[in-house]
Amino acid sequence: MILYIIVGILTAFLLGYIVGKHYGWEKGYIEAEAIVPLELRQQSLEKGKCLICAGSWGKERNYENFSRDLDTL
Image (cartoon, rainbow, N blue to C red; front, side, top):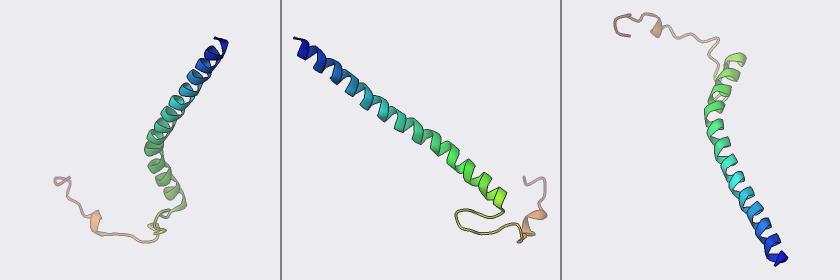
């Protein structure tokens, strides 16, 4: 009888651990999806170049977008 109780308690703890681990991974991925793009953008702006493609935008200027009409925005 005591053996069944011990096995039942261990099973409950194992099941709780598995469910909690799964929930933690899902929550972590959701938070990472929200934070990682912001972190990449912040690091890129601090370094002055794109961390993904290594392109630099600090020295090159694009003069096409400076003559925008405010009514079209």
